[in-house]
Amino acid sequence: MTMALHDKGNKKQPQIEKNSNFLQALGHALEGIGQLLVRERNMRIHFAAALIVLIVGLKVGLGRSDWLWVTVAVFTVIMAEFVNTIVEAIVDLIVGDHYFFLAKVAKDVASGAVLAAVGFAIIIGILIFQPYIFAYLRTF
Image (cartoon, rainbow, N blue to C red; front, side, top):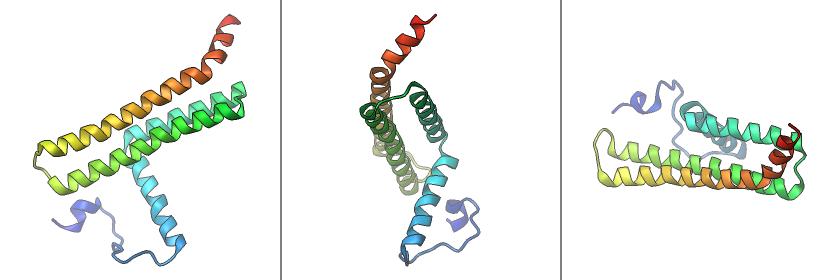
């Protein structure tokens, strides 16, 4: 297969040597995050949910320990999505258009890890925001 099939139209010459400095490595890391946001709908949903949680948390005035738990929950979901995307890309690179049961297992387990992380985040969210939600509902 040609580079164009894998690279989706990138016209730049691919870098094959190690990064020469920190800024180059940082640029590649930011490019990876950008690719994740562009290519993965679920990551955009996770980022939107995180933004909503941030806004609501600021509005209700979460305390320091609550912010710690919310941050852990949000980053657990985001990191699980990173790993899921990595697993999917590697499996797709290796198997191409062929079906292998173990490739399906790898992709399903990685996806399940995201689901578990989201479940964890929902539980944390309920525990943290429940008093604020009940207080808000009592005003009506």
